[in-house]
Image (cartoon, rainbow, N blue to C red; front, side, top):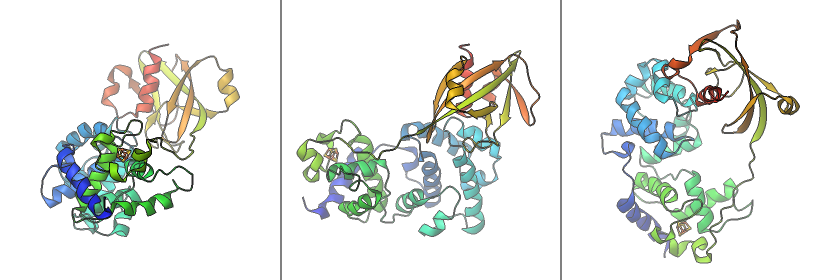
Length: 329
Ligand code: SF4
């Protein structure tokens, strides 16, 4: 197959197989920009199927940039509850304010200007340019990487380096339907070129794919091991009331409500006979001892939560996980 045919093949597949997603709905230019912005923020670190109900609810409550810019931050966080990575929600509001003040309510069409907005980095700015502005960018997400690794059978550390993958991206070429094209490639990665069992019989790239020709689908990933860190969480409770604090101490879950915690060393963790739980964060595995005290303690800037009402509060799933573990004491 000639390389120039690749966009046609991919787009033909996309037209017949794309998922109906709420942010892909045909709508005005302004709405499309807004939908792209919100969905791209939500999709950072989160899967499409998880994002769908959150996106629909969010758009119902904040239907446009202005409603988001003037909304109360607590209300925005409540709508984000369960999606995690709450800094995305705060940055989204800041970006909405900045877009209205400095860009006349439109998403800039320039990479550097987009990157100057809170919460928008290299990947999201390229996605926005491709999806909302039909610019010829193919953002490099895990799906695109996987397709390239298989098409070129990339296995060594050098071959899978970011620089090499960026070079290999020229395989896709460009076309006029840049917005659809970027989404189509990512969609093939998500629906067909799956991590463990690729569905090659449905793929438009079989004739160009070395993994398919060699029947070698194993993906080489960069060696990345999450750090293990040890903590003790102090649960102060009395008559169904629990003491929580706003986190100013740790860089993760910043400003969110957590149980009072301290980082400890491995030996102390091992010695303790109290209940222990594991929590996986994006860049670390936390091993936490739960120390339960049946008395409340005076701690500055703390608040008391009634366990029966926890759904009313904006709590990170991290804190909820500790709450859930308490019922097994
Ligand atoms: S042919 Fe198979 S392995 Fe190759 S890109 Fe398509 S789905 Fe992936």
